[in-house]
Image (cartoon, rainbow, N blue to C red; front, side):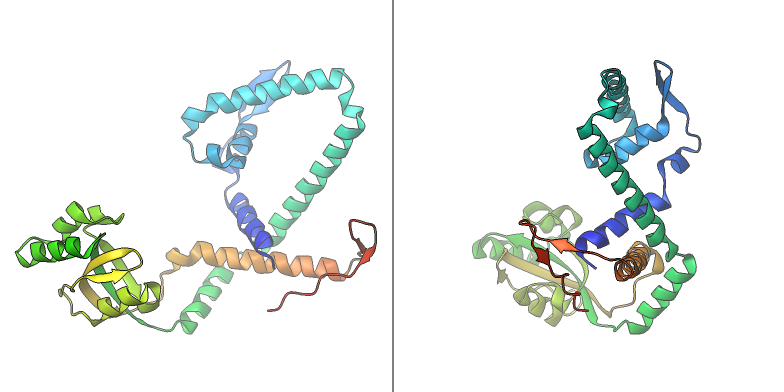
Length: 279
């Protein structure tokens, strides 16, 4: 299944799990324009359909969205009076929109059929059985630009200053204010020079300066352990997305197998069907 199809499955799954009307509880009237109602579901549909609006607080964007819907209704009424409802270009656009809406709604329902609590739990159990524990460490680091700066950092720590304080004051990394805490990571999740040093340290031990492509690091290893499989809550959305993708892929494959499809290139010449993707 293509990445685009997978992304569609995930996005459609999101719409299925929490629909705007369900979130509101009641689809109340937001405005009337010459007797035509604009409902809260219309507001939510527009808000959720635009990333810049979806992330904004409703109280901030609500007047903007409502004004747009009112203007659109007024313009649509004016267009209908001018006979645009029967305009060939408009009718083609409506036909295309109808096709997209029906296709997306069908895909949404097909994708979500396989996403049940039982299926998610079964997939999680399967994932846990296949999980292979790996050694991982929790470490902190202080990132600076030069070896002189790194040696200065190390001197501060040797003179009794807390690692976390030096990190907050001097580290160039984004986690400086959390004391340079990198959390737990496996060896293959860091650049080799950094990982080799971090995994050789003992808990509480601080490294000599280490150079990587990002600059100079001073590393403190906090804890070492064998990795554990993630909790269900941590991977539930990913598992739902996998199941939705698989369900939608199966439906599309069956539809393609049962359909008579002819393809033509930009010059109108017959084309062969694309090869099936390798699994």
